[in-house]
Structures are given as structure tokens and as C-alpha cells.
Length: 116
Image (tube, rainbow, N blue to C red):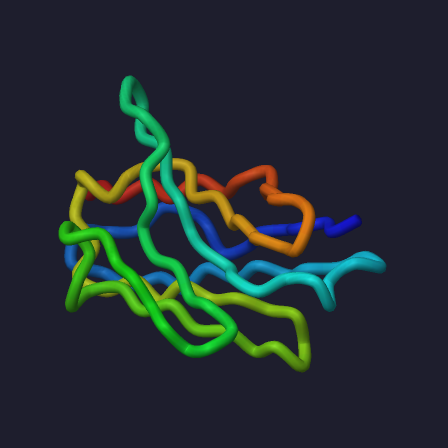
């Protein structure tokens, strides 16, 4: 099994920055081959924000390209989402996701609110 725990959410002013962290733990972390960040805004469907494969390939939503950066520290089983130039439309619950050999895993989510 894999347990994912996000941290780093909070209130941010427009134009500000924030970095989210995701810690993966459990006996099956060695089976993870891709980690990602999704977000879900009120009244909207959950959407992919960014993903990073073990081979280094990354993918970003068009709305965050150039502003958000996903990174991973495989030795520490960590994933990060560095967010810059945050706007009110980035307000959402951000979820960490791990794709593993036999299962997909989700964290509980962390709220990011962009407001003055």
C-alpha cells in the first residue's frame, strides 16, 4: 500500500507563490512510477495540473505552464509543486496522485486559496 500526504496549502495573495509537498509512505512506494498533482475547484471537475514520470517526462495543464513546476525526490519519496504568479482561478483543493504498478493512490488534498 501507499499513503500520500500533502502539505503546504493555505491563503496566498494574487501574484504570490506557494510550494506544495507530497510525502509517499508505505510498503509499496517502490512500485510508484509516476506522481502528479490534480486540483478540484468548487463546482468543477478534478483536473490534472502536472505529472512527472520516473523517466523524467513531465506534463502540465495549459493553464499552469510557465507558472507551476513539478519536481520529485525519489530517494525521499517526495513530490513537490512549486506555484508562482498565483491567480484567484488557481483556488482549489490540490491532490497528490501516485500511479503504481497495480494501483493508483490519492492523498486527502490541501486547500489553496488565492485571494487578497
